[in-house]
Structure formats: C-alpha cells, structure tokens
Length: 285
View 1 (tube, rainbow, N blue to C red):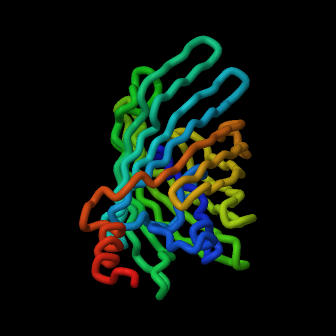
View 2 (view 1 turned 120 degrees about the horizontal axis):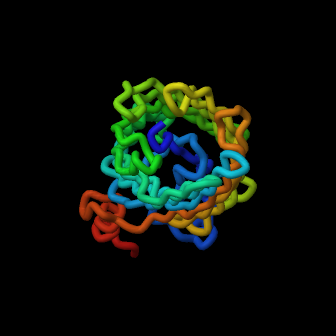
C-alpha cells in the first residue's frame, strides 16, 4: 500500500497497578500506545494536545542478493478526543542487489485517525484511517512509483481474557503503478493479537495479507511477532521479526524502534492544560 498502512499492536489498558499508580500518583496522560511495529493499527487516538513520535529501523531481505533498509518515522498529534492528525515518512532508504545499490529519501504520508464509535467508557472500538502517500521517493532509482497513492483503513479491536487484546484492519487503496500506467486497487487484511505479560511488557503475533504490491504482482502473505516494552507512560521500545509465507512476500524482515510522547503542543486546548487548570481551581488541601 502507501507505506503500507503500518500499524502496531494496541497495548491492553493498564489498571491502577501501573508504575504511576504504584507510587501513589495520578499519571498525567494515559499509557503510551504505539502504532508500531506491526502492520495492524489500533483504534487508540493520541490524547488531545499531545505529540507522539514513533521511529524505527527495518532490514528486509527479498532473496539471496536483494535487501533493503528503511527508517520509518511517524508523528501523531491529538486534535480532539475523536481525531488524531498524523504525518509519516519511510525515512532514509537503501536498496541493494548483486549488481547495484540505490539510496535516498522515502515517500511521505499524511493522514488522520477518526473515532467512529466507542464504548460508554470512551475507548474507541471502531476508527477509520484515511492516508495520502506523497511521491517523494525517487522513481528513477526504483525507490518509489513517483505517483500519488490514496488509501483508507477500517480499524477495530477488543480486549479479551482480561490481559489480552486483538486488533483487526481492513484497508483498500488506489496505488500508483508508475511509468504512466493506471492506478491499481490494493486490499489489506490484518489481525494482531497481543498479551500483557506484565503491565509494561506486551508480546504480539500478527498475520497480514496484501492483494498485490504492483499491477502484475501476486498476493503477499506474512506473519510477524515481536514485543513492546513500556518503560514509562511516555516511553516504549519495540522489536520483532517478520517471515514471508507467499512467493511475493519478503523472505525475512527484522525491525525495532522507539515511541515517545514529547509534550503538549496545543496549549490551552490540550489535555495537560485542562489538568493544570483544574488543579488551580481545586487546589489540594
């Protein structure tokens, strides 16, 4: 897809036994829930006014002599409790085979995650994620098609067995074929299951299917597994491995990254500003 609808397992909601809770403090923000490192995106929306950054590195091997390295970056900003704006990039790319190598910047993605439906408690159970992929990557070097892509994904998920969570995505997109050819339709189906071993550690396993990656290509089927380790409510690291199950899928991919909430960027509109205002109006005795 466009920097294919990358999405990560949603960490099940942590209870009062979290790190902050154990210290007798009320956390300023909800625990971080990254949308990396897997393909499936969770329904969670970044809280109002907060800026969340997710960056990683990925090494992919397509065959004995073909491999690539990417450094994906996503920036997410909570606009309202039902709306999150996001921008991303494939970062610095390097592709090599037995006779050549190409390096350059990857494509840029602009999108928004919109909550369509939530439980009475406010947890989203159905969200939509439209994305525009801007053709920044060089088509002459083979790093991109040089054409605009449009995608939209429907996201849903649910907790089960108290400490486990499942997310499901369906996506469809109009993907540029390059070389003056017409856009082709691409479908995505993915399922990711995560389990909280502790309140900070959540391993996951995922399977995903792309109908095709180019106009004449075959379907792509892969599975991947990894984990997310949250050190604080604002910081988490991740890592994992993906294995291709179809001929068109990459043979092996290894990835890791870090996600961090860096601060309140919307001033009085943000959740932290409202908390500070409430503290001034109702000071502790």
